[in-house]
Length: 506
Image (tube, rainbow, N blue to C red; front, side, top):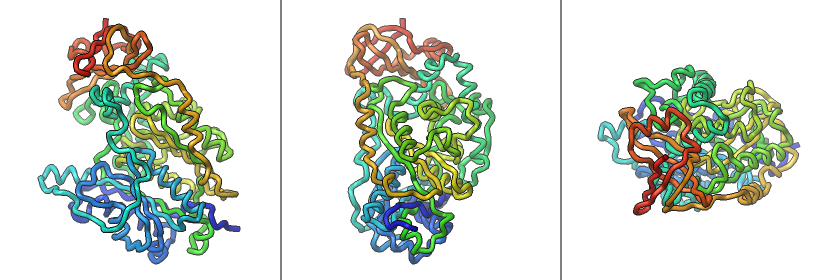
């Protein structure tokens, strides 16, 4: 028996174009429209049925570059006459938020067929900029657009002092977390580098077998951790092959409807995938406020909530895709979910952001589409997909299976309870202009594109318990020492001049 309002994913499509395309015809809008058509075709959804979609949500582009109303542009291209249009707002968890919004709208009979999609064409854009032929995508739609699903913009993840001291650049912040995690594990620099290499090598082997991956190549641990002409240092302890790959042309789409509508449209039941558990929340918003580094209360709470809702434990999950923009995000998520380091289950179905590709805010659309495909080939099995935004700030988890749902509670559950639980956790106060004795809690050394270290960044704690961000003196010998031995726990003095802070170790 089918239900009128139990939501079900009926379509999942992905598009990857490894070659740069002409700006005309190679835009994110073109990629999104193609991904939607792939999702419709592989599910058996007719073109006529697709045009009946009454809502379309697209992930916000990293840079619109002359695209006015992206969801409206996609709706125009697909002839979706009655579709209400919406964009997501910024963050890597937004595809999950979009999916939950679609499911809730269907469960509450506010929508019958919802398309969610997203794309980036940064590779094409980069090549056009290099040849001085890029003047914008030149696309617009006159359709009305609903307010964004999230009001958060690309620079809203950090406060003023964090921006001043480079804690608004993910490629600098995540390696700081990594060094703090290494200290938490009690490993030497060399031993932890080997562990990171082995972890990421496992991901790359999955990407090598994924036709949608940007790099269909597996890398050995040594190729990931060793500096070479094609693998420079970025920020200690990371090399380029440990960073999400943003310069891709990739798109993905999901199509969501109710059981009843799926039956009416003749969608084969073998294509139906359900979300049995879903939760989202963010850790204390600013990096300097966090309870500790190398852990995440939000992941812990979100993961447990989704598992309880789905009625399973972590040992009963058959497939994972843990958000993998950098090694530390995989490790912390794994730890918080209670997955052991030597667990034999793969932690990705895509190959991960450094190897599969990291298309802006839209990676989780791909990991969800990939998981839908895996579950269709393994009926009755269960998959867990996580999302991560900004600086391991926002977190989401979706638990999926082909097994039918008894009701629509997974779509309508009050996910705000997770946030209330996180907000009760201890929070540090921030000192934007610190002075006096202090101790390093997290740090990194940033390299320039010539592979030379040129900047030291620390997160420290003063004797009064307040947190601060600071740069170190630009001393090459100091940089070498910071990368040779553990710098976490080192004491010194911090001073502030015109809001710019400098930490000098003893």
